[in-house]
Length: 156
Image (cartoon, rainbow, N blue to C red; front, side, top):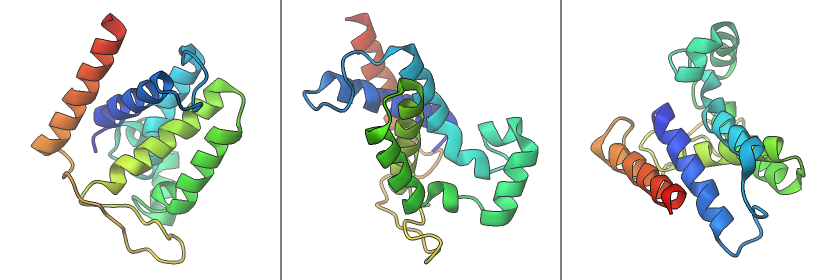
């Protein structure tokens, strides 16, 4: 998924959950949680030197990619578990938002044809529930749908 799709789908998911009766987000998201969600939504791609974040943090991105590869540890089931756990445990909205964004990113990539290594480092094979290919028309539809949802919510 492209970075802008990760941003839009993570934000839409957070707004959707904040509007639901589930006690996932208490009340309004706020600027701190929103900023955290957007950072977390692109953070797992620090492992790809050509990603939006990787180009801005080249030395760190290069090291992580060299050690773990793209969609390695930063996209693993362990990272997903830690992100969900952190989101549910942290009281600080900014850091809880980062955790939510990371979880949203990994979950979105799980639905790509590329998949994610859920059992990394024990097993590097990627798991996928393929709905879209990165850069495909389906991803564009997902992006536009998330964007439309956000616009409708914020305009009303």
